[in-house]
Image (cartoon, rainbow, N blue to C red; front, side, top):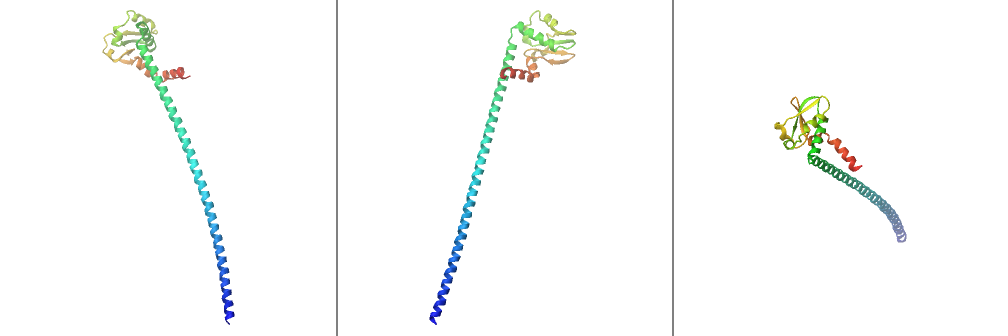
Length: 200
């Protein structure tokens, strides 16, 4: 009887060991599968992060290059504008310091272009009135287009308003023809011409 019981117990033990082995093998297989899946996911995540980092670095590099190029363009533009401003200032100073004969020939030429039909007044600066050549009114008259007449207003209070050039007055309406005002009125055109000369 005890032999029969021992055999049953031995069979149970063997069956239990077999089941335990199968369960352990299955669990080990599942664990290996989970570990392999985790490794794969980790590698994919790492690759994705690396790609995102690379893409972000490339984007940052492109933005940095674009920003640097814009800064360079802005500096070049500012340098050009400064140079154009210096050329305008130099031209203005040269016109102001022309010898009297050339200066008043320039005034007569400007007046001929700005004059209207009919009778008007020309107001010169106090400085120009003090150095007015004796034959200026005659040369002004011959420079003016037909139908235009300008009389120099020697006693005008407005002489102090300008440094160079002149004011024209027709029927109480005043037109500023000082060098600065003429340059300001034609600023874009003058700047374009200077730009073409310097940078072409």
